[in-house]
Amino acid sequence: WDSAEITPEAASILDSAITAYADCDSVPIMLAGYTDRSGSVQYNMGLSERRNSSVRSYLTARSIPDAAITSEAFGESNPRVPTADGVRELQNRRVEISYGPGSGM
Image 1 (cartoon, rainbow, N blue to C red):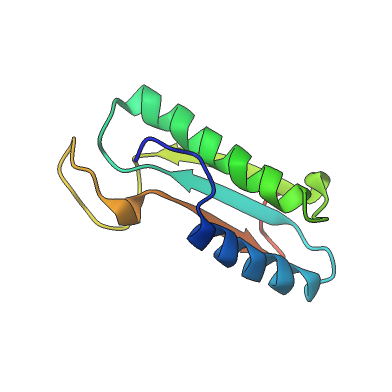
Image 2: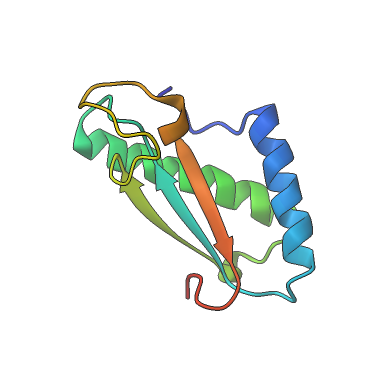
């Protein structure tokens, strides 16, 4: 909650994404950052941007070219689990990664 740090569990998932990317012949990557509905809309937009930035840093530190990555912050919109405003929901705090034709760029 209220964090953009890469957890050990997230690092494991990102490592799998890096391995999958290596099989894709340098295609574009799109990061989509989200938050839960606790906090203000403005704060959550910034937090989702910080989450994207953390994931981008993790990926580029492991040989993914920065130029291949685009990102968009969605804040509390498009929740994975619908909740009322102000509700903390772990599954809504995420960065989704898509890659391949039509992703980013």
